[in-house]
Length: 213
Image (cartoon, rainbow, N blue to C red; front, side):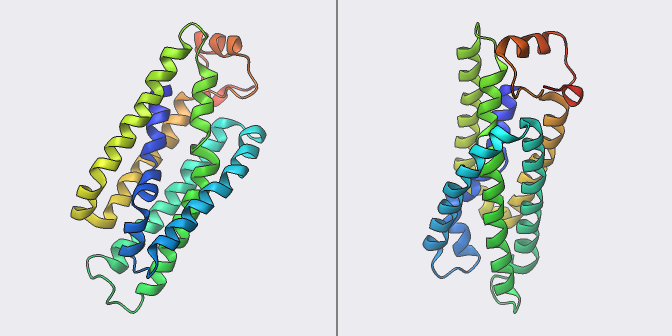
């Protein structure tokens, strides 16, 4: 569970924007793509403060489910706009400026929803789920899965986007839909529970969508 949740954090598509934000904004016609990418970083940084409140205030499962749904909407709008308005015809359409703005706005919205949900909460879920006997090894495997997928996405993105361009967004949309199903069926709520209670909960075969704190 921990490895899958950590993998899904990368498969949300966050690093598609973080690693290649400047390239993406150039592709949508921004004259100063570096400034727009800096704004993206500012949005991510500012949203982190909201994430501190989110983690303490709301149940982790609900935050992950909401974050996946919100990011899925952002990605489907982003990818659909890019495919229908910009690709493969470039910026020769009258609506391209509107399309550029739509894609940039939904990129910022995506980063906000990611920073307040899937950025911090997978680490919290992993930290709260394992008994002390295996905690260090289990967390190492889970976080290792995160970095493995981070490398894979960073390495493969230029090759994939050169072939399918903005259709790439629909791949991440699919993973986000999968993350909703996975969290709903396999991730138990651990907020406010002692480690011993979490261990008992899993040993008793708790059903995630009926478990409460």
